[in-house]
Image (cartoon, rainbow, N blue to C red; front, side):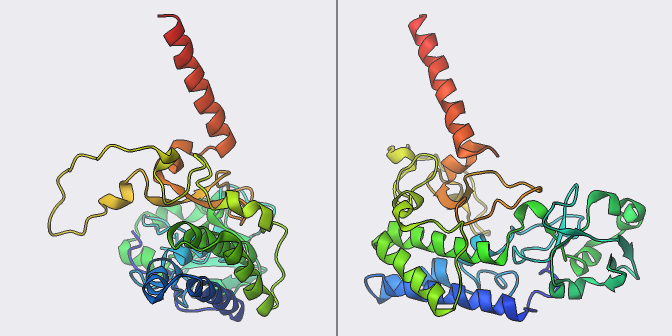
Length: 326
C-alpha cells in the first residue's frame, strides 16, 4: 500500500503558492487577535501554521486548519490515492465523471508507472499537479490494467499516489475560504476572540490579496451560528449539547506507542460537513464546512444535519409513545 508522501508533495504551482500564502496571512491575522504571546504561539502551533507543500508536510508541519480545510484525508491502500494532497488537485477518481471535470481518454501503465492519456498527451504521476483544469479517471478506465495493478507492491503504490477521491475535491477558492471560516471558529471558541472582529480581519486579508470572495462565503450576520457545532448548536469549547459527560473508563494502551485516546473523546474537535460529501458535486465549501464535536459528527453517519435532526426527532417520539403505553 502507499505508505509515503504523495507524489510531488513539495511541487507547487504559482497559484498553489498564492493560495497557501493567503492562508498564512489569515492565520497570522487571527493569531494577532489573541490576548498574549502564549495564546498566539499556541494557536499557530496547533491550528494556524501553514506549510508550503501539497500535503501539509511531514508529521505535523502544517497545523489543523491546513490539514482540514486545504488537504484531503490521509489514505493508504492498494490504490493510487494521495496520502494527503491539496483539495484542488487536478486529477480525481470517481464512479462516473462529475460535470465539473473532463474525463481522461485512458489509463495505462509504463514500467510500473501509471500514465493518463489527456488530450492525446501522456501524463505521468509527477506532473499531474501541473494540469490546467480538473480531470477524472472514472471506474471503467481501470479495468484493462487491473490484473497488473494487483501485482504491485507497497513501493509501487507509493510511487503512484497521485489522485484524490472526487468526493473530497474542492476548488482552490472554496478551500481557502473554508480555511478562514474554520479559523474564525477556532479563535472565537478557544482564544476568546470576538467572532465579528475575526470575521472582519479575514475580509481585510482577502482584500489585501486582491481576492474576490465567492458567493458561498457566509455573511457577517451568519457568523454567530457558524462558530457553533452544527448539530447540537453548542459552543465548540463546551461538551456536546452542553451536557455533563461521564468519564470514560481507561482502556489498555501500549506504553511504547503515542496515545490517540483524546481524539476519540465525545467532545473532541472534528471537521464537519453539514451536507455529506458526494462524488457528483462539490460539498467542501465555506458554507457547508464546519467544526463540530466528534459525538455530533459521528451521529450524522453520512447524512445531512437536517436529516439527522429528523431522525433524532423520530427516535424521541418513538420513546415517548413507548413511555405513554406502559
